[in-house]
Length: 176
Length: 316
Image (cartoon, rainbow over the protein chains, first blue to last red):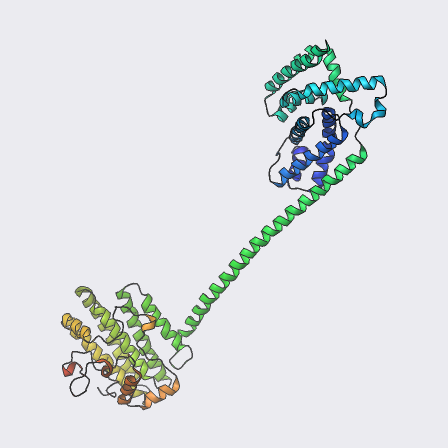
């Protein structure tokens, strides 16, 4: 049996140890994913907490994933990120929380760049956002991404192509 | 990968900027972890509690079911056990009344008239055997036993008269052979050592002979038997069924009554029946009286059933 599947089986029985193991395994990855897309540590923490709360509620209701736990958690997490995009579109920035780090010119330029990219990403469709984020930020292969977006690998490639074209248009054409 | 190969380096650089996420605040992470673990433990406990509640509900249901079943079984088997224990009791024993009730119930529960007749005749046979057994023990059999035997036979004859002619003749033949056996049984019983039992045994034998005569007449002329029975319908079971509530037999009240019956003459017994309003098959109580107030038996032209030897003071 796949260790992940075995862990998920135990988690579905709401065994605290298994749930803790799931949290320790996926929480850092989810935080990193959230903070990259949201740019705010606190909001990213909230996103991670909300992801695990929904996961737990699903298990309590006898629902939730039966396999591919990672894909499930990233899908939930991304939905929360999208909700965050909609409620506060790129208003909170990491720079506001850590002003000392932005004193240098390079940091300021980097931050402006990150804001631009996040803003551009928020203009993509949810699936395109997921594909770009998972592919280019998290380094996932197409098969894993396909599980998150619940589409075949071919569709993932197509999504990726259109997303990149769109991003290029937003970011590079504006730059030009 | 094609898309990656065609990806503009500037775009790649911009996306790489996002990878540079600041490290996670360990305190916030620990708090978040702690909150989640609290949630996890709560969820686990809630699940266990729900399972326990469900188990308790199931257990309550199971316990109720078990208790109900035990009560029902207790009543059923307890009642059955009492019934079973009563089956061997003689008239001078404690559970004999239970046995009489079970007899009536058996007749009542019989599925058809033929079965009822069969059970009635079996019960008559059993009561006769009880009489012989009591006599062999030196105990004077109560007169009520004779009355009950007569009651069983009369009811059997009444039911027989309601059968079709063919079935009636067949059944009468069976009753005839049974009565012949029973009459012989009574004859043998009188050869015992119990001298004081002789009168009641003799009366019973005479009653059996009278009933046998009626059956033999019925075999020759079934219509006459039917008319005779219809005209002298004395039992309260007019609907053709015998129910436990409709028992015709007076309640046996123990040894004192046995003694009274054993020492009384038939006239007193007859008078007792009349006074108590009993529906026991005693001619004087139910037959239409003639002008001089005497019971109108068949020999008196009343068209009734055979006279009760007990009611006649044991005289044939």
